[in-house]
Image (cartoon, rainbow, N blue to C red; front, side, top):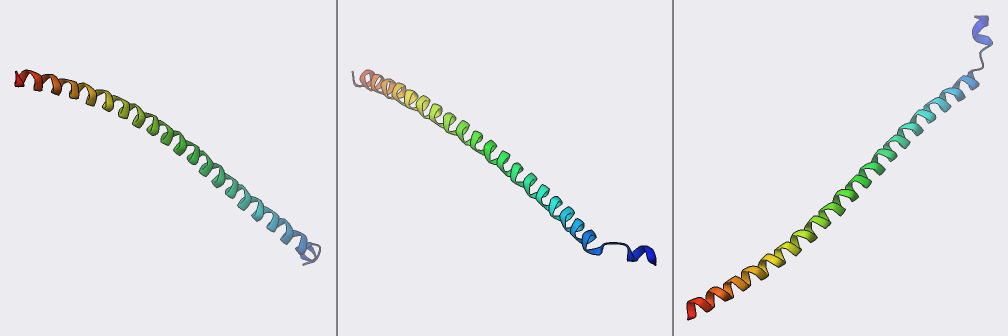
Amino acid sequence: MALFRNISWPRIFAEGVVIVVSILLALWIDTWWGERQERKLELDYLEALQKDFEETRENLEIHIEEVSILLDQVDKVLTV
């Protein structure tokens, strides 16, 4: 029983609290970092999608113009 009397319970409690807080802080930092990485990846995907949409729009505009010219030519041939 003398062994338990020499233990500093407030110090053990404080060390336990420090350990728990440290673990919770590490988990929070890990979660924050993961969310940050996911957000960066999401932004990269969105930028790539925007570029693809712009290229597709340009290609569609070119094809629409080509089809319009072809339709005009077909119309001229049919009206002759």
